[in-house]
Amino acid sequence: MREFIKNLSICFAAGCLAGLGYALGLWALGHYGITRALSVDIAPHLSNAYLYQRVVWGGICGLIFLLPWRKSWITRGFLLSLIPAGILLLLLLPMRGYGIGALALGTLTPLVIVLACAVGGIAGSGWLRAQGK
Image (cartoon, rainbow, N blue to C red; front, side, top):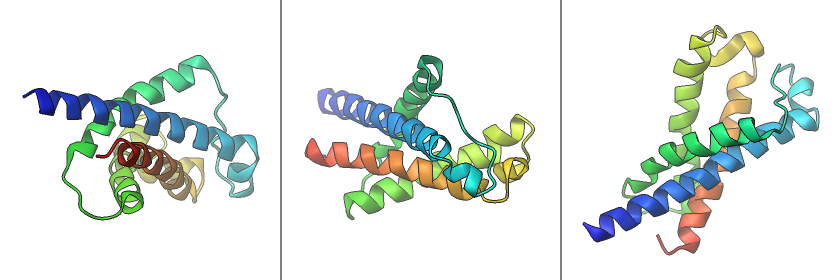
């Protein structure tokens, strides 16, 4: 039981780092004009509220790192990041009125979301690897 709780907290922390990576990745894509160049209407402002929400949700999503994985940490980070990206594109953003895939924000919105989630997922997976997990 003690080992499970230890793994749970390590995965939550990795998810928090992944959430921070996602938030900063998405912010950077907007800040440096990449989303505008792709005709995607996403350019979040860097603020405490913006970061806090993504770090906490990242921690919750980080629990998927508990799934057993034998392949490379980069592959793990990318493939597991597709789960929160799918939740965003198929559930959360459509609930906010942006349609399936948030295509109302631009036709390349799914690509931007997947890339930002991949940055976070690979960062969290790398942190887990550094911890020996």
